Length: 188
Image 1 (tube, rainbow, N blue to C red):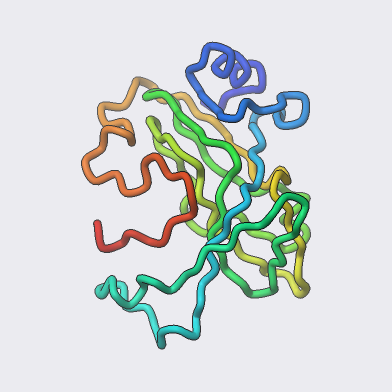
Image 2 (image 1 turned 180 degrees about the vertical axis):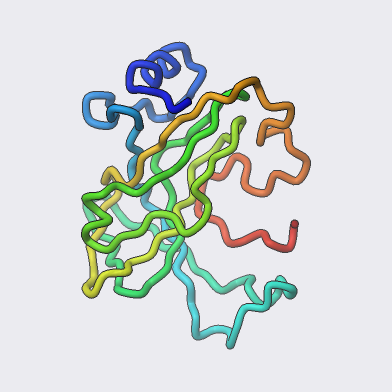
């Protein structure tokens, strides 16, 4: 069951869903979603460093990125065809009986900005900033600013609490993320 605005607000007030810093519900709470804002860090792929990525060889995709941090009021210039890892400004904690899906916002989608490639599901028990797998599929650069409402979370209640919340999962690769992170495929 997808949660309505009323149910999202109740779980936030009860501190079952935790968002830090606390969202401005007037601006960020939708009918059945909660908007999150763009953080100030990006991982940019330096595709000229290596000739290819071999998914069986972690060395082939390590060190292919560099972190860029933008200052307040400064734009991140997102070029056409570019793929970057971004991060939400908010840290999110989901209880053991709530999962979430991350979706892009249509106003940015209409400019060619895709917010996630594949990782649209957020497990119950997740804690951390959400890493955004972003691509500019448009034809011209788009300037993005820290603090912009960049994505929305759609919350779903599980039929019962999970036996393996993400924060307790053995080998949870991205728990407590605070910054964009490179792939940890080698930990599979």
